[in-house]
Length: 52
Image 1 (spheres, rainbow, N blue to C red):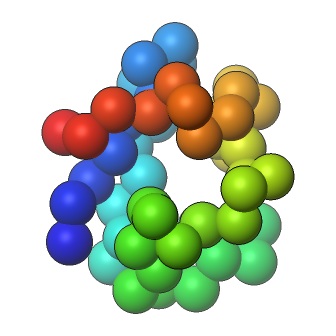
Image 2: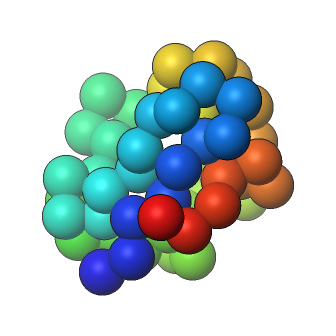
């Protein structure tokens, strides 16, 4: 699965890991993240992420 990088802070969303601290299970594709999900580091929305 495709990884995505938060351009402002450099956080990498890896679908194989998910974001368990924020209720996102491993195996969740970036496209399947809730619309209100934000970067766990800087709080920016999905629109600032780019494919790695």
